[in-house]
Image (cartoon, rainbow, N blue to C red; front, side, top):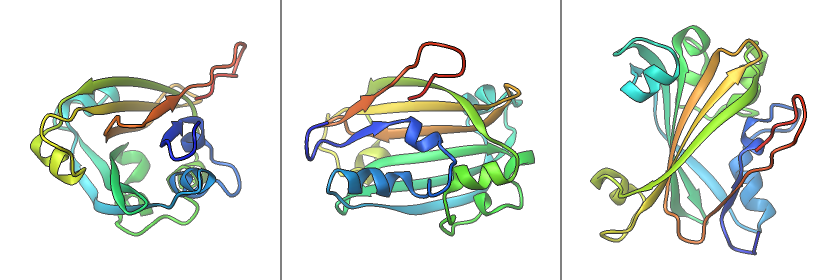
Length: 185
């Protein structure tokens, strides 16, 4: 990845090993940049239809939602909404607005919910007015939407993420190993 080109390797965000912590800040620091985030909202909410369907829940089901704005060098770079089934996240730090020490993936692992596989869909589209304002985009500037489903060893959904980001100078990298249990990225 070229210096200054924001990028993402999804495997970093799925790892729960020691020191995994804030993958966003670590990834930015590796590129000589400063990554931070602000939690806009956290708590129980009605699942959007796409999220409810993906998590295998009924329409209008309740989930724990964490909404964040990710900043790169102080500039809004990504909107990230993460959704967890209630039976996994209710009453945990995932439902609160405080930063989670060691990261959400580490906390999920401690709770017995380790993601072992992820499915991602990426699409380009025009932003909503709220997304355009939050990301400080020019009129008509498109966004990339990345929708990720993380599954546990039993095949059950652990979380769903919806990320919206401007595509300018952005590159997504996927590394796929060939063989049993080697898919990353």
